[in-house]
Length: 311
Ligand SMILES: NC(=O)c1ccc[n+]([C@@H]2O[C@H](COP(=O)([O-])OP(=O)(O)OC[C@H]3O[C@@H](n4cnc5c(N)ncnc54)[C@H](OP(=O)(O)O)[C@@H]3O)[C@@H](O)[C@H]2O)c1
Figure 1 (cartoon, protein in one colour):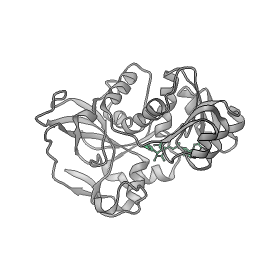
Figure 2 (tube, rainbow, N blue to C red):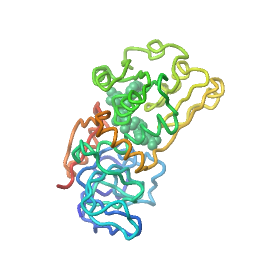
Figure 3 (cartoon, rainbow, N blue to C red):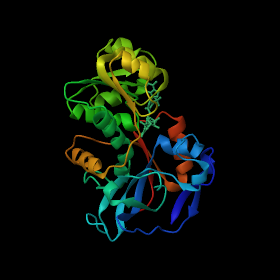
Figure 4 (cartoon, rainbow, N blue to C red):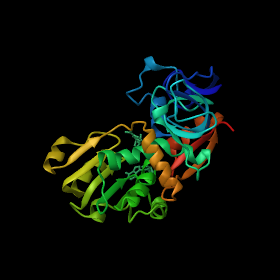
């Protein structure tokens, strides 16, 4: 099978299109024939050697954490899927989807939403499950609460806005000026241009129940001013200050997304009910993976970039 492999860390030209053997599923594993995969910031950070969980000793490596495709073969212990089923998943770090086939554990796999084609479906798993786990599993967001989402126009943020609205929350989000209409279209109650306006002035001091931080750095530090006493701060990037958390009687965590087929099935039901939609900004063939990663790293991207792989 064709696969994009890295043998060393570095710029996008370390991504090499190569021939690898098709893996064979055993026990609770499923071989998926890949139709599309998406590009996530973690792929670029891993390729560059800037993602500490992946070290040199684990090379060579096939990148890619999202997959949409069809079941090709199942292990003996698999009960819920059969050849031909249309599926999607978040992959664990041991498997990569920049390839024609990949192995997925049965518990991590979900039915592809019927309303989406494979390209759209590949845009969903990692970003949407991160948004779900950040807002609900870690953030405990409830109807009527006010959430501030930093970076609302990106892969994770554009799902987070839609989930929070579907849950009945009041949503403020920081974005670039060009993305203000985009996030309002997703349901955001308040869009704040992070370049021209201080979000502290826009939302007010001590007003926010949950800060969902997808940006980090000074954006995270400044967010303490808007958090309610007893509020929650959740980051996908770095652990918020424990001293500030104590001062605000707040719960503050960072987390790493975990593959979860059950949550992905629930997300698929929201998609099929018309309550959630991925935004695919650009599509590339697998052979153009270097350009796809460079675009995610350098350009202003709304939603997701997808690689189309098989047919
Ligand atoms: N812990 C985990 O398991 C996990 C899971 C998924 C993602 N992540 C991380 O979470 C971050 C977000 O992921 P993603 O997939 O959503 O990335 P993305 O698609 O690149 O989106 C990031 C968004 O943040 C915006 N942004 C940058 N600086 C900003 C600022 N100061 N204020 C407001 N918005 C700003 C960007 O807009 P502009 O282009 O206009 O700057 C972009 O729309 C990434 O760093 C990723 O690595 C972690």
